[in-house]
Image (cartoon, rainbow, N blue to C red; front, side):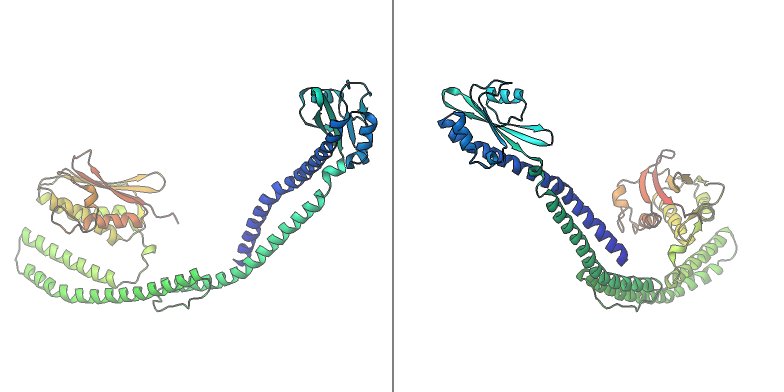
Length: 436
């Protein structure tokens, strides 16, 4: 991880350095060129006071000798009366195209002209009687690149120093982060494997220290929650066993007959469900490894609810794929969802109201589980999905159980109106277990 962080730091710093280096690289050359051109215009402006006093070629030539560009034979003056192609009224060696000089003399605008690998600046000077003289100054190739390579070398050196420094600093910081993160990850792994007494000593950066404190707090709360859950399970086992035993004994003494047999079956089923709840509360199995066949679970639950539906005159239908459909949940959790949704139909719709359950595969490894009825529907779907809220006088937990299962399976629950039956439709989209 330290190597990765150092590589990331080097890459990021290099990108930042390049982002600044590329424009600065071009800016250095542009700045040197602008400086050379500006210096040429200053030299051209230095002769203007002389031209304002005299246009005598001898006087102008002597004045040019006192200017740096004139000393280097880089200045030329085109006096008023000069014509293109003529050497009269010209002081110095002409270099710019005659047409460009003539245009400058006519419009009175400064220009910069490229001549080979050099530049020539043309500066018009307005004299008396609206006459215009043109001063030409040569900018040599060495003047256009003086100091560019040295400046670029300095910029490159600074960039390399910044990259090396950032890598060194990031490596030092990464060593602290890596040690603290590794210990935090090891502690989280051990906590996930069941070692609830694991704690870590806060160290490293302030953020990781805060994370370590939060981890210790979470682990302590988990320990208390598990202890409370075990106590609750033990309490439930004592509080439910006694009335359950009385109910089973009472059902056994009812004699023979269809209703008596049905009551005994219901009591046995209730006793089995209570035992399952107690076992699940005390179980330490890993829920993330659980899978179940949704088709088999739905068939088994519809066998139970179908018998009750026939007693109440409810028509029902189960539509499932011919094969198996594996979901990343336990059979008990899926059964609880099916029982909650079907139980709502029996509780909140009149006898004789039909229902249907459909399990259908969708693209991208998703299945659709819908439970629909022919009842009056759900007046406020949003409130119905809120845990503990119910407008029908129940606990309000049935749809919340379905929502929790859908979220664990990376899906969702929606409440709509059934197109086929006209009543409520509870639709769960559930993601299938990955294929081994």
